[in-house]
Each structure stands twice: as structure tokens, then as C-alpha cells.
Length: 242
Ligand SMILES: [Zn+2]
Image 1 (cartoon, rainbow, N blue to C red):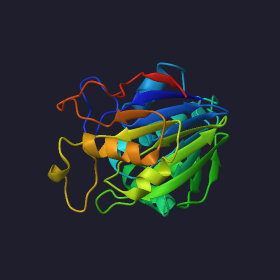
Image 2 (cartoon, rainbow, N blue to C red; image 1 turned 135 degrees about the horizontal axis):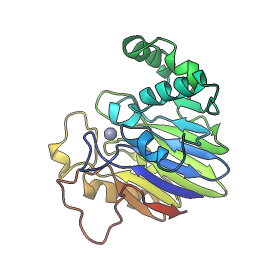
Image 3 (cartoon, protein in one colour; image 1 turned 90 degrees about the vertical axis):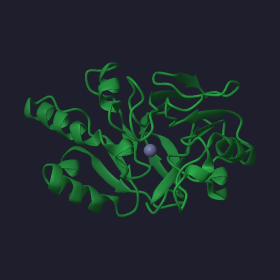
């Protein structure tokens, strides 16, 4: 299994950066989140992304925003008789209705279903996406529904935190994983809002310790914060064999 960090910026882009997008290549091509900048990066690899499935962790814009231009590009190509393969799009519970509401404001109510095969995942229920088994676990992210994703394929396991405050559920989602991609958005935990929504570096390290995962990749970190030595931080374009 290979993981490519397509983009790893937080809620605003780091200089030259793309926002959340992580590509897992195993038995299929699986994209975890699709924030602004991700589509342009993927188009540097292929004329149009060869992605079998996309899973969205939550509906903050930095995690799904590029689904909008993905629709316009796909419809343009359809119109030219050159339609890209239809990717499955997995969203949180009630996400299909939310996509319809976004569509009504941004284009057409059915704009997303014209282009993607839409599915809602259920927390704790494994589903098959691009040949990988995925389990979504609810994690704390202010007052928004947000999920960590545990992805299993080729007898390897990758867990991606999405955006999460401190939580036993997050460590459980990464239990004994081969790779734990974990956000470390904050300088200090006490600077977070209430209820909590993100992790500081020490909290990400604590989640990693508690999980028993084998390798930690820290991500979603503003370039304004220190990237302390000794830890592995994501950067756009990083490719890891898992
Ligand atoms: Zn985010």
C-alpha cells in the first residue's frame, strides 16, 4: 500500500500548499478528503484524476471544497463525450442531503450525484471503497460531525485522524495501525475552542502512544508553528510505502 500526501495544509493553505487530501494506492485508488488545491495537484499526475473512491471526513471546506470544481470538470468532459470513470463518493451520515443543499447554492441540487456515486457511511460499520475496507469513527471536532478513517488493504492498515480533538476514540481508530496520519494543528491545547476540535503536538503524540500504531505522520499543521525535530511531518507530495 502506498500513501501520497496530496495536500496537508490546515484550514488556510500554507504557502504554495494544498489543503487536505491523502491518496491511498493499494487494490484501488482511494482519496481521503478533497480540500482546495487537491484537484490541481492530482491533475499534475493524470489529465483527470484516476480515483476509484473518495471518502470525506467532515464538511469543513478544507476537507471537501475541491469536490465542486471536480463536478464542473467532470461535466465539461462528459459534454465532450470524454467522461471520466465515475468515482464513488462516501460522506458522513446525512451527507447526501448536505451535498444537495450545497449544490442548490453552488450550482444544481443534483450536481454531485450527476458525477459521483454517492454513499453515506455509518460510524463503526466497515464499507468497501476502492478495494479497501474502511471504518469511520466519530471523533470530537467542535460541534460538527467528524470522523477518523481506518483503512485496511493488502494486509496493511492506515488510520487518518481527519480533524479531531483529544479522544480515546481516536486512539482506538488507530489501534496497532501500520501508519497513523494524525493532525497536530495547534500550538497548545488550551488555545483550542470549547468543545475541543484539534490537537496540539503533545496531544497527537499521546494519541499515537495510546494507539500502539507503528509509525506516526503528523499533518494539518500551520507553517506558522514549529515543526519540532525528531518527528515525521507531512508535506505535499510526500510518498510513503506502508
Ligand atoms: Zn481541517
